[in-house]
Length: 166
Image (tube, rainbow, N blue to C red; front, top):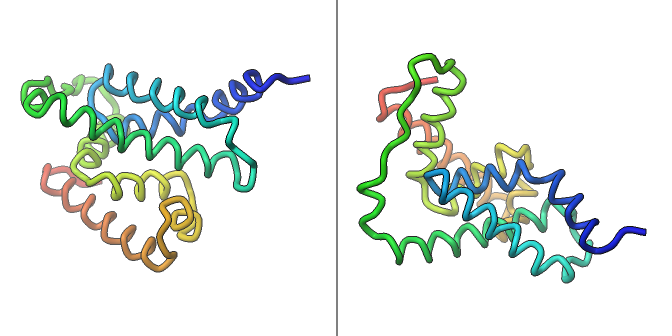
């Protein structure tokens, strides 16, 4: 018989890629990503006993993870208003392949989006339908579709402004 803890750990193990993506979309820098990843796991564990199974586990995980990321961002922003200006920007290795370069430009552009836009892009990249995105963000399906299209256009423009086009 599975314990609550082992059941939780199995689910987290199968969904850790989603948590990592959320961490990468919301914060820059390896240490910050690791901190956010750990905070999301902690918040998921804290609220796991309240998960009633009325929705899919992944839907619940998205909501808790995104809300945790938003809270984390607000705390970090208050702590380090000027620290961002002094951080080193990740330097591309000359031998990196095209796909890695594209990902770096993509994540760099994503960091310029607001938190809701980041959530929209993340859920879209996870293959969620407009209806699922709307449910996860608590907005209407039409609003999700419109916001997602605008966010994709904005993301493309940011990437073009960097002088890189896919």
